[in-house]
Length: 480
Ligand SMILES: Cc1cc2nc3c(=O)[nH]c(=O)nc-3n(C[C@H](O)[C@H](O)[C@H](O)COP(=O)(O)OP(=O)(O)OC[C@H]3O[C@@H](n4cnc5c(N)ncnc54)[C@H](O)[C@@H]3O)c2cc1C
Image (spheres, rainbow, N blue to C red):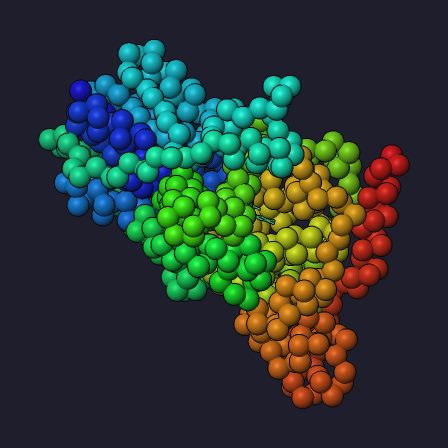
């Protein structure tokens, strides 16, 4: 009467409904993780995510060993792997937490049906979301396409219960099935060590996630609304990769923050915490969109954008990827991304707008680069956000809103803290020129020992002209 507990994007032991159900079944448990690249195809995890996954699996393996068992690692098509283990062990149940990527959803439904037909109990649970994507509907019974009413609907569902703690011990079968060695999967870089900055910035795993949350609850959460747009300070939680890999769940975060608010802050919820909860809701909204519009990662939701005349110049795309556009706020973001696997949300919006509107590059190019380089690369949030910036999504920023990178820099990084950190070439320029080195006076450039076009690039496009070009392309689209 063994239960297979299939881990995927729920790499935690606390607040894990599938695990809790497997434990309460009262039988021996086989904890299993499958590297299912073959199933995921185009959306198999990118390089940065693979680095994270390695650490997360180490962490969950260690937690399981402390409870007297171990994590079985297998690679291949999930249906084939699970079938093999069921046959080998005579397991009578398979439990897992749900996924919402279209490929995973289709596969898991097939798997559930196949298992049930053979009399094996197959059950899935919700560990990743506050509300399932199908649970919230507009008054007409349609999916939401606009964030604000979605948020209002979600907000009414209070989460009162504390998350269930991790089980103390897990019953182990006499022998666990064979496991691959994690080191054999090659998830971490082999030749060039591009992940040194990742190690400094992050601690993958459930413990690392809890520590991030602890550091954020309190002053940081209360001041979130004022600081969340300033990339030069640590004003956000940094929980996104932990959430993506399910090392922490949104209900745990929600409950911790709302109980802190009522306990400490006196008033029910401070504006900072309320704003933070609404950001968690953006994640839920992205999952809602992906669930109801499964082509979200690959097709613009607004049909008219299919005919957009993208230029996709490979030289310009390369300059953007390397952080060599000549616009310091854009370059700072792209270098932060390359070094740490993460980028501040405000800067993500700026670099995305720059790629799409200033360089006229198809948003899917940016989506693909982020997919490979972000440690929090998430099919729902990434594709929804790229469509949002491009103006072709469900609740999109209007296409004609084109960020001016110099003005955005001056507004959100007024002291140049952020750009000086990531673009040392411009570090000695005065605040008045640090976001627009091309406009610096010759004396300022020579005092800062910087020769434009040599030490740091001149802008690869002229923003004012690029903006006009983008608007004209958009007008052309509308009149077609
Ligand atoms: C072009 C672009 C691509 C993006 N790609 C991703 C991605 O692949 N994965 C990802 O998790 N986020 C993505 N985001 C959203 C957002 O930038 C990150 O979630 C956020 O920067 C993570 O940092 P944090 O954990 O400190 O966020 P906080 O500000 O502390 O927010 C808390 C949590 O809320 C969620 N959240 C916050 N903002 C958003 C948002 N706009 N959309 C969806 N969820 C949000 C995240 O889970 C985040 O961890 C993208 C945004 C843009 C503009």
